[in-house]
Figure 1 (cartoon, rainbow, N blue to C red):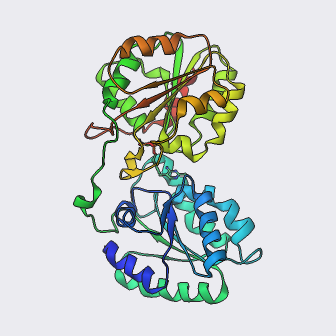
Figure 2 (figure 1 turned 90 degrees about the vertical axis):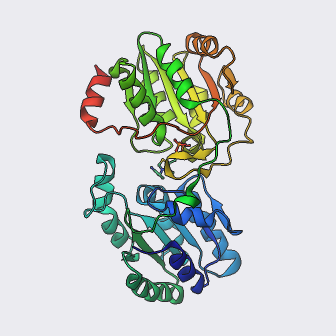
Figure 3 (figure 1 turned 30 degrees about the vertical axis):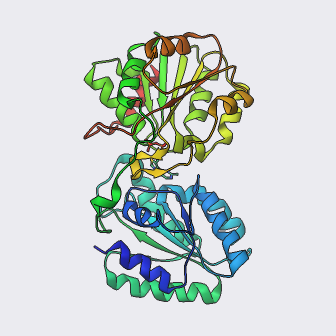
Length: 364
Ligand SMILES: Cc1ncc(C[n+]2csc(CCOP(=O)(O)OP(=O)(O)O)c2C)c(N)n1
């Protein structure tokens, strides 16, 4: 185990004073300390974070720190390979990567493949890296950073679940809104029209829906849980809706929506009457530590209308909630609803495990 403070002062000693990235549960403690730093930007996706780091280097000649979960490495690949790589513009970067699915640690099915190929991917990209498990590993990483600075290359460290010492005090999650998320989801699930299907985002949304479906013994075959592919919920739902007679209800999170915001334009333009998009906006990346998404000032009603949705709504309290939900689900138009909700209050959420069974049931 290592203390996050030790990691941060190590980076500081290497003259790093700009941090950007996308939050990750493995790096929760690291993200939590960064919250109070001046030169820190939470990016909407990992490619954008790499690009912010590239811009920082161009302006300052200093090496930035870009952090992410290893699943986000795929989002980062384009600017890493086509801009920052030694054979292109040769831009030095320090990557701090949360290593879900490390072969040494038991993890969820969706993390296995990426966990196994993470080091191979870094090797393919010629990115020298260190697995950080103890303070001693920082010495090796230090040498690699010095090399990266001198040769203007990219360097990375991999951090597994449980490596960073926990600090419970620093991990408080703030509620921005009052409408209880569970209460909304319960009413919504109890009112879905027959022949509807639900596609829900990664993060807590899918797990909460799974919990409520079990708790109230609702029909399980409605649901396709996006256990990965953050940001792609609306595209999967759109693809399904265009080739199905079923009504499709897409349940997305604000972090997920913002990760690939452009997808909403495609949905707004192409969706038919059977497409219902619900944004559960808690203004946080709740499931990975409660870091802000900065979504609270966005006027989603206007935005979604301008992107082509025929009907757009905002809901933020219990007033006429059931009526509003029924109306939204039954209206004959591609429609968008922003629901301003609390963070999740449910303890011990289940996780989708048997993914092939879930897929088969959904497709039947
Ligand atoms: C590409 C990618 N980057 C980062 C993550 C880590 N991650 C999992 S859930 C999540 C936050 C999702 O935020 P939101 O959609 O608002 O849902 P909430 O956490 O609030 O339930 C993040 C960053 C991921 N799974 N995939």
